[in-house]
Image (cartoon, rainbow, N blue to C red; front, side):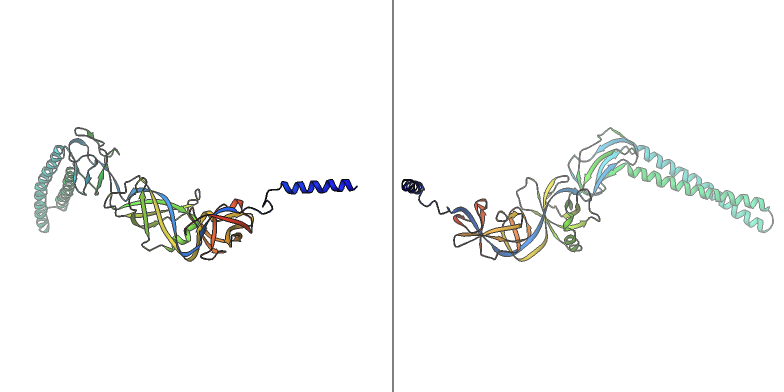
Length: 363
């Protein structure tokens, strides 16, 4: 028995000698810290939008004929009323001359019929002619008067056709590709465009945001709310415009609502059909606590952070107002100035010792 007890003591002493020095003390976990700050934080909605012209005009021929002349080049900036195409005007001038001649002929006949009517009325008062003869004279004069109105309508139509032979720009904007050339035959009412003109200034950007922001968006109605847009691939300063349209229904398929913003676009940085990055300041959260988004950990009990104090990390539940890619906005749980762990949380438990590897800045 004494020998056995001596053997146990020897084994215990040997195992104690084999333990590395300091193994009983848990090693400090390396972490990166950042300070919580209090400040006003704007709620900025970001979306991808599409540039679209306020007005687009498909220039079509309103009379049929051969294109005599094209007075602009593809891609030109054209002004409203500028001549774009000239259709051969000779057939329309001939039609106008014919209508004017018919009016002159019928005017002479009506003048003669009017004098006959007046003469018969005077004779009928003295009973020198019958009532039937008077009625006939009146009917002839009335028929020729109607013919004169028809002739005048024919003249107006001929003048309008002659006017339409000169095709003018209906709006100010940039012309697209030429779809017909000199010598081509165009037909009225065919639906074929001669050229398409897009208004470039002002211009609109259409974009969609989640419908969860509808209440805040409705509060902006009637205001000149600023909207910023940056063309994709453009690193220059954002273009500033104003929100001018909120759709009257939510898209049930996507859960979004459509908006439009108008931009002056004097420098033509926004191009129809191009994609842009859109930013809309929706509201401002006053005096809230802001942390780097990486500091917030989500667990089964909710969101929490590790606050470092006196070399130890303490788990602290927090209440999130909102969280983005870079920052988290809190309503409770952390005070301004406290140091929180932004990297290394996976190695921590409540009360664990930490070793600061890097002191991050404020978000």
